[in-house]
Length: 118
Image (cartoon, rainbow, N blue to C red; front, side, top):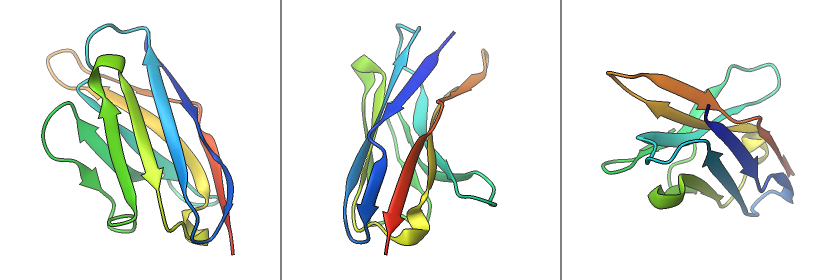
């Protein structure tokens, strides 16, 4: 069983920065895909950024140029550096881990609240 634990959320003023971290436990090999989703009140959960162990990252258009995802494959830890935060970035941010075929699984963290005040 893979467990994902996020940290680094909080409240910040518009234009500020936060850095989220997510550490995976319960697995000794590198997780093929890790990333972040977010869910604002009354809205569906949406992709923020995904990063494979190697290859291209994928960002939501709304965060391109402001957010940067990175990871430490050896530690199965993923980070999200969020700069130039806007009130519309306010949401619960969830860490996500996925493995594709032939043995597929995905896991979610418990979520961390990010609040951006204007």
